[in-house]
Amino acid sequence: MLQKSNWIQLFIQYLQMEKNCSIHTVRNYEGDLLHFTHFMEKLGVVCYTDVLSDHVKKYLTELFEKKYARKTVSRKISTLRSFYSFHQREERVKDNVFTFIHLPKSEHKLPNFLYEEEMNHLFEGLSGHRPIDQRDRALLELLYATGMRVSECSQLLIEHIDFSIGTVYLMGKGQKERYVPIGSYALDSIYTYIHNGRAQLFKKTKDSNQHLFLNYRGGRLSERSIRTIMQKRMDQTALQKKLRPHDIRHSFATHLLNNGADLRVVQELLGHEHLSTTQIYTHVTKERLRDVYKQHHPRA
Image (cartoon, rainbow, N blue to C red; front, top):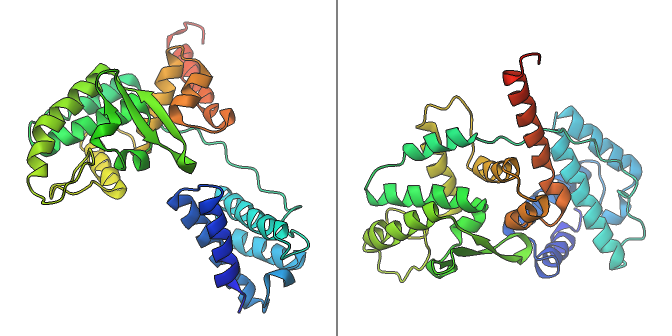
């Protein structure tokens, strides 16, 4: 057996303590490492220091034969490169066998988003007055107004909303803090929800729960529940698109850039560490311009 429990655990601690990685990132790293470890064990490799380039080639062959997506293969190799780099730094291994492994080129897929009229159509479907209707309306308004991640939304407390200046405090990936403005539509919906719908949901629990979004039992609305609710609301519309809650974040960024927002400002609002991550949305706006041109220019 490979010394997986010790080496992987040390790397996980490094990700959590030094890199401040989110629980989801840590989980992905751990899953990738266990997958690699199990494959090495099948090859008879008994120690991470015994892994050779031939073993790595066999692992890559296995991934492609099992038809893993190129993005998934890239992530796994990146994980293993970081894993060996860490243990190389700690002088447990001499060489990083993944240093010269070339990652497959990523597929350049543009993010899905809704046009502004489609977002309006989605909001029109949230006009009920029940507590959960008010919650879902506030939820959608806030996601679209700020572009926050669903994971950030699930952790929000009431005190994180500042109605006086119209901002929300967010804790993003890697424990990075940021303040994002909230528009008037979202503020109005949140205010109504807090003083009406949320107050009614809160009566169903004995806990002193200060999270902004509650489930029907009065407990914190989990990340999974938010995704389920948003997916259900999207499915209820007549939009002929397959959408995910994260597409609201894509829509937020796309609409800002379409209306002339500076790319670096959008980067700050989204909480992206690198500008290159935000630049994908410039390709979306170019596609939008091309579509408009083809539809309306007489000699397109």
